[in-house]
Image (cartoon, rainbow over all chains, first blue to last red; front, side):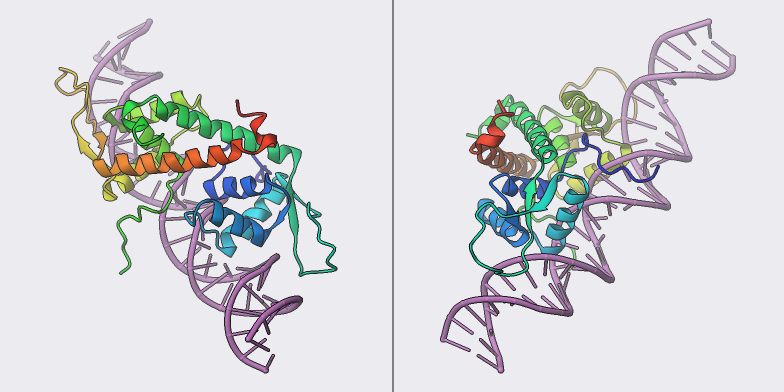
Length: 120
Length: 120
DNA sequence: CGTATACATATCGTCTAACGATACGTCATG
DNA sequence: CATGACGTATCGTTAGACGATATGTATACG
């Protein structure tokens, strides 16, 4: 009993959350995820190829995402050897669960006067 | 130029955020932080001694926390060999910055109808 | 009194994942 | 035809998470 495909209870890492969040907007290929995340975070999160594709592989193994067709499939024959990914039902669930966790952190932080000052 | 004490731009890990969050409520010693985090997260985040004390050491090195006296110093002579920690000014800033980042993630997620459903 | 248990800190070894470098390939531009 | 953006993949290094283990103190219990 060495391999445990995925323990749903274990919180996701920040890079993974961002990848999932990008895919929550629609099916995307790796490079598009990278651009999406960098743009959205204003460059704060910068996904290198290692982080990106290794994370994608792990997410595939864990059944949180799956390879498939693009949402906005261009009539283009073959632009390049792109691989499109989309969230699975499980992926949606896990992402929502993770966001709920982050929400709880923020709620807790906002209950602290010393922290609220800087937090809208 | 190998050692960079701390790059303020680099996002913190979840365990570290939780530790900082516990200290945002007042000075605490390691074991109290552990209990605090476990209780607050309903057991979802469980800090083992390795994670905990190694993170504390890194935070000390980075100047985000400092060793000091307890808030609620008991009149007790010496309960045990406890080490109390508190956030530094820099620690408060970094934590607020980090929470702002998490807030941005949540705002973005809430803009997605498919994600809003599960997120209050 | 002795021992079990909760409290408290510290270190070590292992393993996962982040990260940057590198590589390979396609496509458009000049 | 070379340069650079696009796109995927793998490798080596390193940081950090994690559990096991060690050590010690205070306290409850029989």
